[in-house]
Length: 185
Image (cartoon, rainbow, N blue to C red; front, side):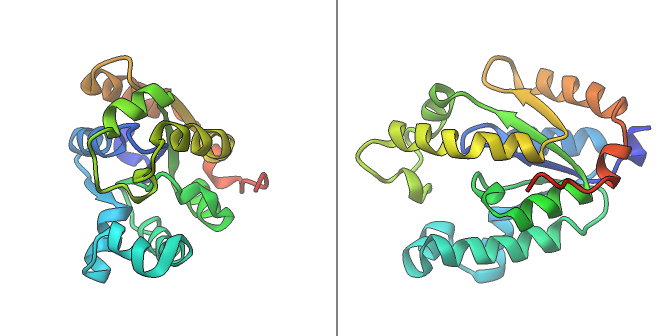
């Protein structure tokens, strides 16, 4: 049953564990793991921080939408998206209609602990990163919930256990949830 599943797309805030869970899930499913930020970096030859510095967030988001469109058309992958991918209604439609979207919901304290020393996150290079994370969570949480087929809390258990829980949910997933367009944009 799990072999027949469409692609799985992971959304959630920075520090939610999308890459960690995505890699483990892909291994369990025997699928390729892709990360939209890594894909953008490989296509441009520049890292995300540089793109933000040179093109601003708007320029990065345009690149991200092109990447999400391309990547969500690939069959049977596991994809980790950037934390802000859900800001675009177009991205939300690509994700929701082309695969199973899993929202990894990490509280702000978990995000803070996991991103505190990470200098590669342009949005957090501010005087009060915790406030930035709180503000982003307030704005994006409703969008993550809107696009998600499955919501999983993170930060409270080991990644391998989470993947096992997720595999159980995927095994009983109702495929009609994907084929019906999401009109809640």
